[in-house]
Image (tube, helix red, strand yellow):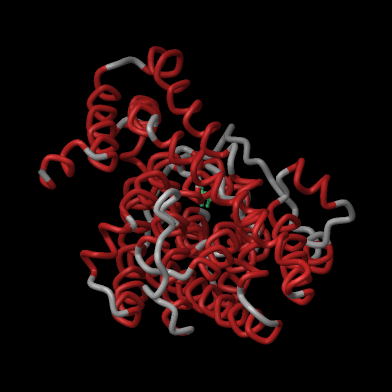
Length: 411
Ligand code: ASP
């Protein structure tokens, strides 16, 4: 009985969608895929992203309010930010080291003539920090400016918590709104197998093997760096949490598959929250860490920053000095924090790193050809980093696996 439900359960249905999508993508023309298959995937992404802003507002307010008194909020926030910062810095560094060893851009004789790179001049840091504070929270909600939404929601949740009992109904209200958004996600997920099919078939048909080959070394390098990062950072974290690797892989499978196929951590947010809870993260901590990490904790994007910087420098024959490599780590961390959880966002943000060390921005156009594949790799890691942090902080706070799940919403 249990075996049967495994083979027909939602995760397996999504796997079937993935495999059939790869097959279909090999068989149909790009025109057919664009007209008929891509919309199936786009519908899925729209449905799943529809819940993001209300979910982040509700869970962060309820999460911050539910963390306890001000000193407890402070200690959890500090632990969370520390885990985010350390893993992110390790990620860029590993990307740099692996790329220096593998030389993904050496010997590449691709012409960049005629390629147009979208450039983004990095704004001054003071402006970036200032703009985290919204002048009008409603405007931030409407535009989906996630850093501003996060700032307001955490501040609001903190005030609710300081007010204590008289504001209790506000915590309860936002907790329920969060639960409703998760419920909505559960319904949307019923469509996931078809959405995954549409997304992957379109991707395979558009970026077939022939497109990937010239830049295969870059993809391989990003893949190796990512695997190495997972081995040296995530495996010890899973050990520290006290969980078996197989249990974690099983628990994180659905958010990973959504991230992999949609290339959007925002799309995987709700399901990541749910799965982290099911793996034992405390509700208040998961509600705080997951939405926050979804926007600012991008380990996969950080690896990518390191790898692409070395790749691009090599393509243009630029020798990176030690101090430039250090600059790449710093700017890579900031660029990853500022990357939105949507497809291709990291590619635009590489311009910040490239500009900093004087790499011509034409490199961006070169990478763009295979960015979808790189995006699948980096978004997977972006999402896993959030659930691991929620579990780790729950463990540090002694609340791992101590709470019962709501039988209705499963969070
Ligand atoms: N697609 C990534 C994400 O959603 C962001 C990026 O492009 O690096 O996490």
